Length: 131
Image (cartoon, rainbow, N blue to C red; front, side, top):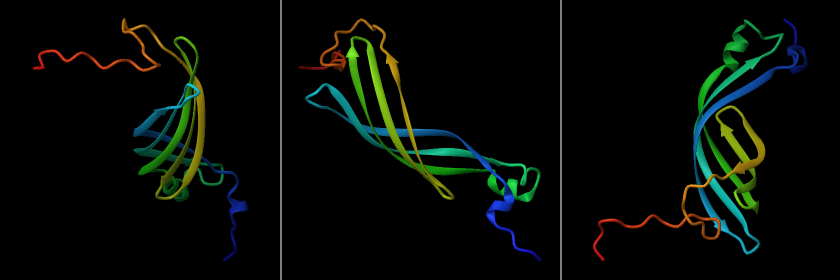
């Protein structure tokens, strides 16, 4: 037999398609920035491929469906009415890999005929409740 190291396998590309549910704790700051932290769980479909492992048992070992957990933190800022800018960092841990990810974006808020107070919608009125 011979010795095979990771360099002999050529580059392997991994992709992850996930469906997850997060819970977040959100608070406002004095500088009009919403911040949040949270935890989540999800189902991940992993796919590994590369020229050295395609159509082999190694590729089959790299392809899997597994559960994972995430921790996240981020912030939102509303520079003008109906526009929010956000950023989020996330750490995801699966049974075989862990990774960090970051995302950012722009949210467009549409009118829903409610008065907005401090960037948060007021609670709905209690109908049919005794005083």
